[in-house]
Length: 214
Image 1 (cartoon, rainbow, N blue to C red):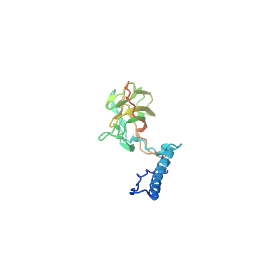
Image 2 (cartoon, rainbow, N blue to C red):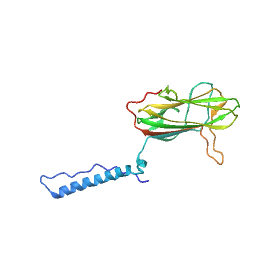
Image 3 (cartoon, rainbow, N blue to C red):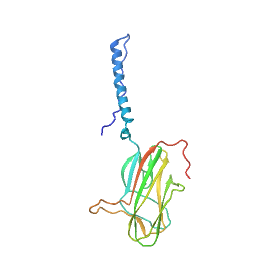
């Protein structure tokens, strides 16, 4: 993929004490070259495939180990132990669960978790959003699992506004300890299974004024 080239500021020639056509020709040629480069970049950005040149903030995080629930009806942060992408989106220093942004805007979060159960009793699992340590109202998803030892998936896809230095943390709870977010090592023919994956993408500037959460 070809990349846009940022044109250097034009090095304009110094004018003489009197009018010289050669100076003006040189001056115009330098400006013409500079504006042609700018025009080419703008044309590429505004073309059908111009979005490929825009380096939008994004991140992708996953967990290669199980996450269990030591106590029932207790909130635990969803954790990640590996980072694949982190352009202006990262796990906060010293944290495995707080996803922080360094550019304000509206972000899309896409989470999926691999669930496994170890009993046939009904088990309820709850997943919700916290921003800067505060739960977001009406952000909970709930799932009920019945069978013993099946694989299942949970997912949560949402947009939310974040300013510079703010973070999102997914919270999860269960009414049973017979359930976990399950990771598995690679087994032929498939690669390893993460217990959770979180993709984050910048989608729009920060609104003004910012909305009030429910």
